Image (cartoon, rainbow, N blue to C red; front, side, top):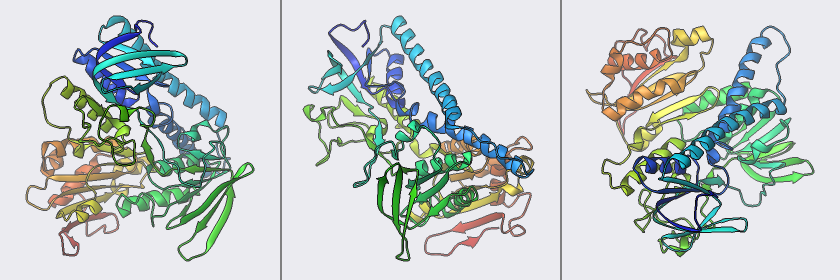
Length: 500
């Protein structure tokens, strides 16, 4: 605990949890002059550094470089390039240390030079509506706070009857503690995390990957064409995708994992692999906080508080980030945390517009998105127009020899053609998405996008061509390249009709 903290002290705000959302809340409170205590049980930065975004994306970046290098050497009949887990882990630890060092130095300097910020390490637990006890070993600190923000993050969801030992059967946290690259692995769950690790491990080229999911296709929340491109890419890397499969059993047998699948045709498939990864989502970390001692309303039979946004039934206690159990993304958690503190400080303003938040999935190829996709528009009965152009039509993608992917732009079915959403699948996808997110926030139509002068050759020219397709002014005409370009209109109770 901070040496400057007396045995008992009062704060304007106590933030429990030093992950991305908690840290953002504390720093915004410092901006606004609130006397703030940030409490972290383990490591400041949380999953955002140690077993989440930074770590997995560092692995993805390394694996992409290995895969790209091997794509070249394979064509020249040379031996593939391989990295040992020791080499991979060394780079991963360097990345984690750099980010951790930034946080540590920043907090030390802030505590030294500011009267508004203090930091305590330990396990925080409510003892009343405004009182908190912080335990670290045999040391205890009692504090009071006018306002409290709970930002305790999440942990991997575990399936019943499938014990995770973090040695052979791993969670999405435990996979970072492997001692070597496995020769084979089964990944249970084909959502974002499962597909990202399938991408990473197959890219390194040392691991036979089995990807299992109940759904008929991977990434079932995305449009079918997005799912299809990613699935075909994984299969080219040797990943075996078991769709519409029921996992009947998964158990450790000695130093291996054995899994049995019930296939759609009623047959069973049993196989042994070196490792298994359970990747079926995450759940909030709220156990042991003593929330029941505050008097807030909790959902029946759970430790999860009833929430209205981030607010609990007690106006001075808020929950942000993964601890809310929804929208478990770093960018959304940080925005909500900052806004919550602004409300605590008495600032007024509109609620955060999370409908225009951009997302990225680190796959092969990478997938970025903003707003609605086609299946969401249809589910909500929203008439829309859609334009799609393949990467193989873009000069920059051809020059990069990376033509797998596409841009897809959705707009309202009216004269204004306001942007409803976009999906980018391929190289530089994340770099191309933010301009469209800004247009959505501003309520801008596609004409402005079509009229922008983009750099050439660039991937973002594909976004412009989608806008031109919708306006009938594209460089290539959709009917000529039916397999590479599409422009269509969808309305409820009608079949899709070409708009080109």
